[in-house]
View 1 (cartoon, rainbow, N blue to C red):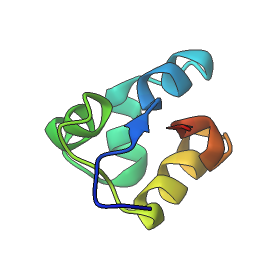
View 2: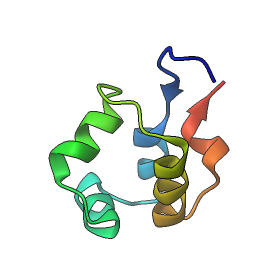
View 3: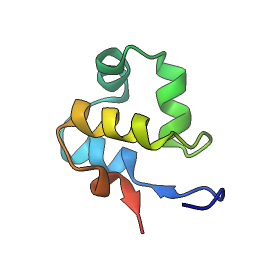
View 4: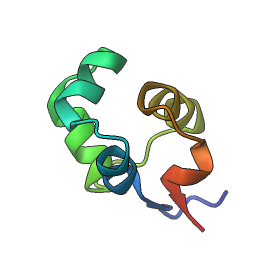
Length: 67
């Protein structure tokens, strides 16, 4: 993947799986502000973090990335 920001669909995945940003932050042991930045695409998480997010939500990593 290039250094340009990937278009993430974290918010859509959270909504479709009934998980709030607050719940995701708790599940990942992160600050809510950090999750908010990822949802808004102000911060581009590593692939490892995307895997953790997918596990916490109960979805596939591919569901989080807009290709």
